[in-house]
Length: 335
Image 1 (cartoon, rainbow, N blue to C red):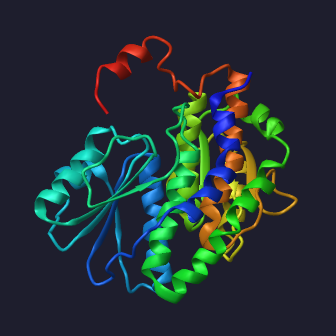
Image 2 (image 1 turned 180 degrees about the vertical axis):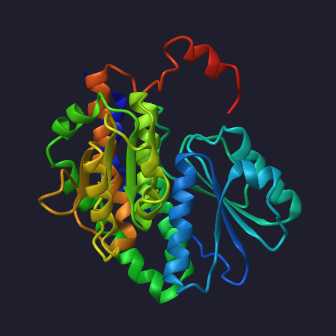
Image 3 (image 1 turned 30 degrees about the horizontal axis):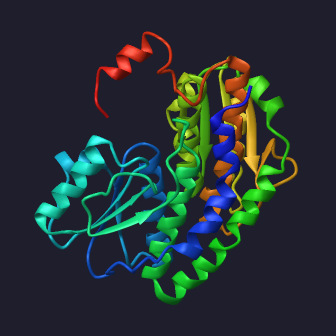
């Protein structure tokens, strides 16, 4: 069984290859506070962008990544802020409301959304890729990351130019990753297990959260993504036989915590697999610059979602809206 999800996953190198050549992205003002806002997958992209700015500026810039819901209803906001709102289709309630609130206050606004989304209420609109047919979003996530990378890179001068040079290598790394064998064997061992823990260190923790969301949407299994160290604090009390786990293997020193977590999971009879750049990893992706890993490390985990969906006969394109009672329940509220 093939899904629209499969086509979207495969389209990512081409989609990213188009963005740097076509998109003109101005710099943000580093003297003013910066807020990134989104929901779900878009919020994960915002968290990555905030990490990029903070790391590349050596901590001089301290942006925040907030839920668009929080930004509308709770977060302090002034006319000095620069507000970057990321969305897929541009039609959800709170990302649009976040832009309206920021504009009413007089803040500078940037909307990052798909090519065919309605025109947002923003000072600057940056388009990513055509809207996805599958509701388990993939290419719109990595395309948003590529646009955010351009925004970050152009804001940071020479340091940013080096970062953007690395971005040019990402489509080829994606292509190499897609040439890896489909993760059928891992999918077969995880398809009957629940919940599934996804964990990573540093930026890989955000990838773990995004992967967990894909698993929920596409396979209807409960999954949770978290930072590796947090997975060792408290959560082991709830870990038990019958669960599954995927740990993203770090390429830099994490004080041995990924190895410690893996040992603990295996001792508790959890089916545990790794995702990384080495031959011994169960799921593999091509190596890229450390900061750009989120664009590539997510691909084998997207493919894992598709393979588990095939085994479980779920529909990642509809994310359960094609079956009752989910059809009625999810239609009863407005996103």
